[in-house]
Image (cartoon, rainbow, N blue to C red):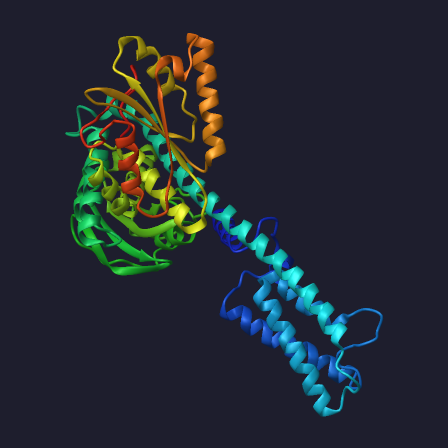
Length: 479
C-alpha cells in the first residue's frame, strides 16, 4: 500500500473520532456512531449484559450486594459515549430487567429504591459530561473545517503568486491570455452557471475550454464524482471523445489519494500500463471531491511539473467558485461593490454561525475625506491580522475600512480596537475621538446576513452599492 493511500485512510479514520483518540484500540472503545446505531448498540449491549449476568448468577442477575454496583458500569459507559438520552434508556432497560427477573423468580424482596436512585443520578452525571464534551468537540470540528478551507484557499493563492511572474515572462508571448484573465474567466463561469443551474459541475464545458487553453490540453474530459463513485459519462470534453476506463491505474490512484496522478507520481508503479497522460481531482476546499479531469493527450513540452500544478490550481479555483457561488452572489447582489474574497468568507462565517453558534464579527472604521486622515487610513488598512479579510472603500463623503474577523466575539473586537488605537497613538499621537474616526461593529448573524451587512454600511454612512473599493498604495487587487 502506498504512503499517500495510507495517510489518506488514517486521515479519514481520524475524522470520525474525537480529539485525542487514535489507533485501532481507541476506535474499538469509542466508535463514531450515533442515531439508530447508538440505539441498536444500547439494546443489544444491555440485553447481552443482563443475560450473561443471569446465566452466571441466576439467583442475583443484577449483582446486588457485591460491594460495588457492577450493574451500573455499562449504563455509565453508554452515557459517557452517547449522552444523557442513551444513558436514561439504559436505566429504563435495567429497570425493566428487574421486573422481568422478579416475575421469573430470580430476585426477591422489596424494590431496591436507593440502588436505582443512586444509579440514575450517576448515569445523569455521566451523560451530562458526555453531552458537554460532545458539543465542544462539534464546535472544534466546525472551527477546524473552516480553517482547513481557509488554508486550502491560501495555499492555492500562494502558489498562484509564486508562478505568476514566471508565467508572465515565459508564456506571455505564446499565449493569448494572462493568468489573471484565466482566473477571471473561471470565476465568472463558476458563479454564473452555478447560480443558474445549481449543478455540481456547473459550467463544466466553458471551464474546460479555458483550462485547455491555459494548460495546452489537446484531448481531455471532465467526469462528475459523488463520493468515491465516478460517473462514466463525461460532463465536458475537449478534443476527440474517448471512453473512461475505470480500472486504469491513474484513475484508481487519483480516486484513492485525491491527488494528481501521472506516470511519475509517488506511490504509482512506473511500469503501470495506462492510456492517459494525467488524471487530476477537482477538489472544493481541502477534501471535497466533485469531479475528475482525465487528460488523454497534450503536447510533450507541456507535460511538466509546473504545468500540471497549474492545472490543479485552476481546477481547485473553479471548484471553490462553484461551491460558494450561490452565497457570494447573494451578498454581491445586495452590495455590488463588495469584493469576492470578502463576500466568500462572510458567507462561510454566516453558515458557521448558523450551524455551530460560533461568533465572528465585522468592524467598520469610518474616516472623513480629509487629506490629513490619509496616513491614518493607510496605516489601518495595512495593520489587519493575517486571518482577517479587509474591504477598504470610499464614497463621496466618507471612506471606511471594513474588517471581517473570523471566529472573533465582542471581546476580540474590543481587543482589536484597543490595538489599533494604541498604534495610532504611538505613531501619530492621536486616538479615535481626536481623529474623528467612527466605530461600527456587527456580529455576523446566521440568518439575514446580507441585510445585516447593508444596515451596517448605512449606519456607517457608506453606501455599499455606490462605494468603490480603495486599495492602499502599492497593493495589487486580489484576484
